Image 1 (cartoon, helix red, strand yellow):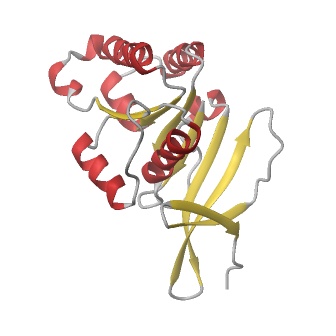
Image 2 (image 1 turned 120 degrees about the horizontal axis):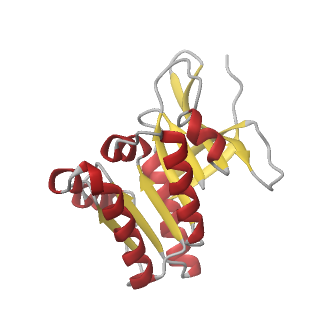
Length: 208
């Protein structure tokens, strides 16, 4: 369970979709992208504009669950969500899952006991033997948590994306692995940028 947290414009959706795309095209590993806010048509158009095309059949799908909030009662929405996840797993046997986003999930599900219910949700997702990326929107400026107190402690990994001013005019996107259980990793910020249908990560340029 990996949290991908960042402010608007840090390319969270594009980065997670790219991971699904690369695994599908290069390794034949199937992935599912669940969108709870952006429509499927809009998301697919956005990703095609980035060059993510020609995916092998059955290896990468986008499931638009945003309309569920209009058609399903809040009391049973999470059951419907689980059914959609399990049914897609049986159908395409995907190994990678993206949930976009945590904020939308919390709003639609209306958890009464967030820590307990999110814990149960995470454990259920783990039982499906998936690698799950959950996108979380962060506020600009000071922050105390990446995805919320409950989620930060329950997540196995946290990736933080942010915008940084470099010099007087340039803005640079940066990425940091805050934590990744059972993995030795750097906790430094790295510059990352998109070019030729992929993301590149480099040593960050010093601030001036």
